[in-house]
Image 1 (cartoon, rainbow, N blue to C red):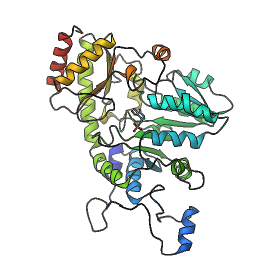
Image 2 (cartoon, protein in one colour):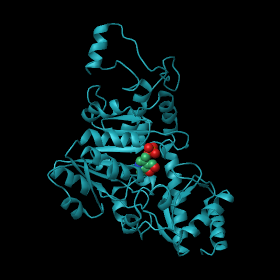
Image 3 (cartoon, rainbow, N blue to C red):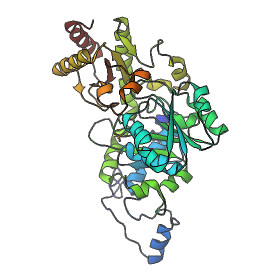
Image 4 (cartoon, helix red, strand yellow):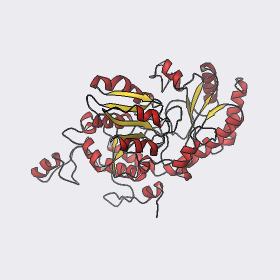
Amino acid sequence: MSFKPANNIQDLQYFGEFGGVNPSISDSSTYTFLSAKTMFDTFEGNTDGCYLYSRHTSPSNLYLGEALAAMEGTETANVSGSGMGAITPTLLQLCGAGDHIVSSRTIYGGTYAFLKNFTPRMQIQTTFVDITKLDIVEASITKNTKVLYCETVSNPLLEVADIKGLAAIAKKHNLKLVVDNTFSPLSISPAKLGADVVIHSLTKFINGSSDTMGGVVCGTNEFITELKSVIDGASMLLGSSMDSLRSSSILKNMRTLHIRMKQHSKNATYLAHKFEQDGLKTVYPGLASHPSHNLFKSMINEEYGFGGMLTIDVGSLDKANALMELMQERNLGYLAVSLGFYKTLFSAPGTSTSSEIPEEEQIEMGLTDGLIRFSIGLDNDIERSYQMMKDCMIELDIL
Ligand code: PLP
């Protein structure tokens, strides 16, 4: 029998120490040992079930990590204080001086800046490629390449990576395929398609209430243990740990993720079709016009849909700004970066989340000035939201 991802979350059962229906929050940064020998063994990484210090791990962080590993179908997971706090230690654990990364060129601006500007200081070089062209990806691999890096659905252009195809290339060349699945939780399960490591910014859909940062690395027991090693583990030593209070709140929010994702997808699908019918240049993986629509369909866990992210191009930055301001004024959403909130969020990526990418590279990858990225909210009446958005566009001569 095959299980759906949500069933794995559904089947988790944790109790608090007094029988509470939620696990107790471990409100401690450090832990006692009954014997000095056990403390020594724990430092050496030899004592399962003993807690040492909360930067290493805590019971609350383990509960959340287990739920995320169950969702992604990996052996285990390690949560972190932010999405970047998951991405940067993963790449630094896998690569050292002289190593090389082949990365999608359309990725979150912060990850791009890390690979382009920061890791070269450590003699780690990255080649940025069009991830949808598997022949180009393979041709970019050198004898020093250690990692293939991509986002399942890319930020902000919503390009879709062929995870199975990339996994085959990674396997052939003995590389690790690291996939950021922030835009498509539940809809796509990269590890089940062959990714070695799956990362999320929990700040987005998974937590879903825009009240905290968070991240996770999902992978094998071996890799996660390496990341947490007190001797040379990048997560442990760089210190991007999550606080237990936050992990317990994210765990509670995560229980409604499957319901929220269905509603985000339903609303985004409705709007994408309407915008496209109105003649707007609309990008949404659920549209037949999306170049990777069939690829997404071949990877999808169908019931969760094509996700909550879409883009439209309104022709110029001035128009994009005017539209976003008007939509905010009419309470159709917020002019804000980030995604996965109950309210629709919109921003112009060229001047915000992707501004780390130089202008000429933005042009080359098709990131135009008039592009608006939408994270579609959980509106109960999306038909009304659409009508009101359309009115704004008519008023501003966009339609
Ligand atoms: N990955 C993607 C796809 C993102 O959109 C973001 C943030 O916008 C990140 C990673 C970074 O996550 P965080 O802001 O939680 O550090």
